[in-house]
Length: 500
View (cartoon, rainbow, N blue to C red):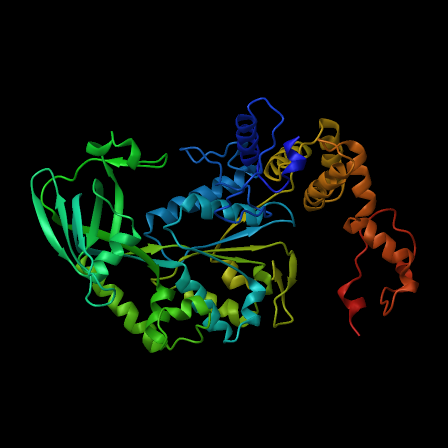
């Protein structure tokens, strides 16, 4: 069973390993050592199964699609917002995702990010991050806004593109006596030219392992060499090709061409490069510091010039602020003003609070957001999942975490999720898989779910335990009136009771 032999691999990787072993063993009992070549780290997160919003062309939400389940109205509304973002004509619109904990608010935001693609900037932050940065709150919000606005810069570069006919390198007899010299012959379908090579170009050719028959491009400005593939004319040279060899046509026309290159950078990246002495290295160090308003004004003026000349386009993105109720009245006032700017992105905020105090004041408001800002928001509500939708989500999570589970175990897990919370039931999946692995089982069964259910408490059982044994804990502040059993209901002390 390859599930237990290679628990860290995905199902596809395990299947490939199994096939490789079967082919290597050839039906005999010879074991071959397995070599894993992991090109990137793959970790399973809370929303790693989200691939998009799961909408069709008419912006109608499919029941189960791209990792999204249920929340049809909220997803349909998010699809309309996406269309508005793609149009890029309207700036400074704001959307509030409001709903109970565990109803998929962050999942919808992640689905929007996936659906927009990599070119559209999507900046994500939590409301509490503002207070832990070594800069003012308004500066942190300004930088977040600028991260969500992209600039698509177009520039033309001259390149040499052709098929390598021959490379001649003259190596001196004595090492270090004289620099290497050489000649490079390139051709297209219409012409052939010989270029003299210097030391740096020879090193670049050796680094890219360029040989006769390769089709390459050389950037004249930087001298960078890119290997596009091998020419179809050399497709019969079996000794000079491998399994990954890519064949391309011999280039047509002249060797020297002008090519348009497109770069997408955010306004924040341009700000950092122009405001720090170390330039773009500050982007990697993370030490951006506060950026002076004069720098931003100059950059905005320059970007406006590029737009008029047709050299650049503005790509409005999305700024997503989770737990927005953690912002205070100063941040909310700043957001009110910032949303009126022409360069403002689409703001998406999420909260799970009801009517509560606005941070920094004694006034209560829906979602802990001032009324004047609420008036600017398009409010999208999420609703609790039904039992059937919970089951579909648990099926998706089992597949994502690569856990085999019996139908009875899934039914029990679904019932637990319906009575406690979706997040708690999702946490039990991997824990139950480990228990099943210990008893050498390929599938998670009901007894595994029951075992982890007794090992790990949910919020309700934990609260019940605290109420029953509160005298044995230090600094207990629950009043005597709450000592009576609560019959499994959630017990939460009032804010007034918790204050000194």
